[in-house]
Amino acid sequence: MELYDVMRTTFAAREFTDDTLPDEVLWRIFDSARFAPSGGNRQGAHITVVRDPDVRRRLAELGTAAARRYFAQLQAGENPWNSIHPSGAPQDIIDRTEIPETFVAPIVKAPVVLVFSVDLTVVAAVDQDLSRVGLASGASVYPLVWNVLLAARDEGYGGTITTMAIAAEAHVRQLLGIPDQHAVAAIVPLGKPVRQLTKLRRRAVAEFVTRDRFDGPAFDG
Image (cartoon, rainbow, N blue to C red; front, side, top):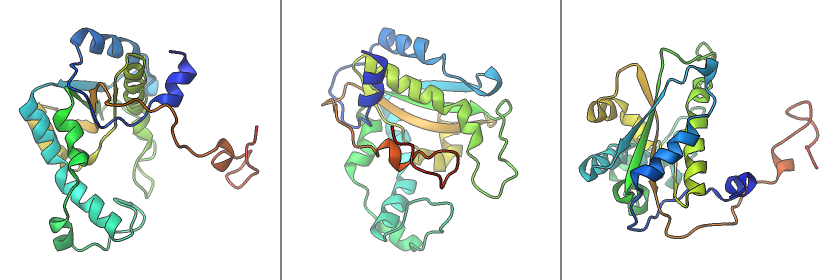
């Protein structure tokens, strides 16, 4: 596929066929995705390839508590897991909130799940002293995650970035033997999508790109 076609048609795939994802295809995906940039080219990211169905199910279970909070906040009209506006959803409501099967099924049913982590001893967290949630160190791992999804699309496969299990990071580390200095960045189920979307809904460029200043004129081509 042409690069722009891949970029425009790589969607969040959550439903997969029973097709396998062979190791040779997965290796080709990794072999191209590894050229993603990282801070100082330190390449501190690690990918754990999980095929064991019991481990995949456990990863899905580890994300359920965070998912309950997510859906309880949605039902309360909040933006879930927002770091600026604290949640007003009571814990007992959160605990009773049901999670749609489609929210955990991708991790359980995908033929392979990739767990991305990054070594915190080599990333440059230049925003660590700011009074907000840190984001900058993600630059050393998320380009790799997205490169994997782009390469998977080119191979006829797909997946989605999930993060709910990160709230239970200590348990994820224990489950997979991830060192304490590694932060879990994403859990990505991969497989053959049941259907391939070709028209994605995204904001127009002029709606989120401006000239010279945040409040400057829209960048209109």
